[in-house]
Amino acid sequence: MKNNLKNVKLFGLMSLLMMMLAGCGKPYLSALRPAGEVAQEQFNLMMLAVYIMILVIVVVTVIFILAVIKFRRGKVGENFVPKDVHGNHKLEIVWTLIPIILLTILAIPTVALTFKLADTKAMDKVDSKGQNKEMIVNVTANLYWWEFEYPNQKIVTSQELVVPTDTKVYFRLHSADVKHSFWIPAVGGKMDTNVENINKFYLIFDSKKAQDANNVFYGKCAELCGPSHALMDFKVKTMSKDDFKTWVAKMQDVKKAKPALTAEAKQGEKVFKQSCQGCHAVTPTGKGAKGPNLTTYGDRTRVAGVLDHNEENLKKWIKDPEAIKPGNKMTGQYKVSDSDIDALAKYLMERKVEE
Image (cartoon, one colour):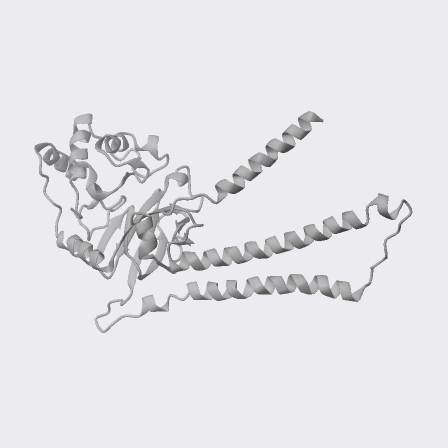
């Protein structure tokens, strides 16, 4: 008996801790701390569903407790027979109407928000020059990295999405290999990226909430896509509209790959041209044949999306990518010596645009 009571107390304590921890989250990642209009609307809809469920639970619990107290055996006796309510039309109407009303309360805003978020007609409108007036990003998901193309600005980045705040940013989502899912938990989403079609939606990044997150949000793949699905992360850098224009101008100003600065980096540049250039681009307007664009590699905050951004981790990634991201497309592509890897790391860490 004592052991059972102890187990019940332990279970209750663990349940309480789990409920408390469920409310924890960082501003750059948690869907429970919305940082944009879309995320806030989705959060409000989720909370409406939670309130309805809590109401149902409370009502059922109260009725159950009252029934237990009122009709307990010691009060009504051994031979008590409750009143037969079978065929009571009033009761049947009541317990049929109540669920319909609750579902209607939830369904109306759900349908309205679904149609609102699906309205992407604005991204298809162009001016007399054939350019879109809206901020558009073409997202291509790969095993296991992300490519972001800005068609209006004619630049390409990989692994780190850069967006202006307080602006409606439209996304075209596509996959280069298998089904993935684009998700920035704190800002909104998620939506699948498919091979056979393009999905569209938009997000708005709130400037004040972005400051709370140090202007960096985390994005993830939300669709099981292979052995390194859990490591398919990306970062979102938010900027004011003016800073974003400055960033775009700097990117567009890079007409060709920047030359290496140090002697070791120059050796790394030669290695890159011999071994890496077939898959990777180092200009903002270029798309790699198989791999990410590396123009802003030195400005990134992560190596391979998951490791701290430093030369040692970069060397580990180049030397044995399979050990870090199993099943990635780079495995077996590079056949270079340790000295060449050292030089290559120096060259890549110099690929900077923002500074």
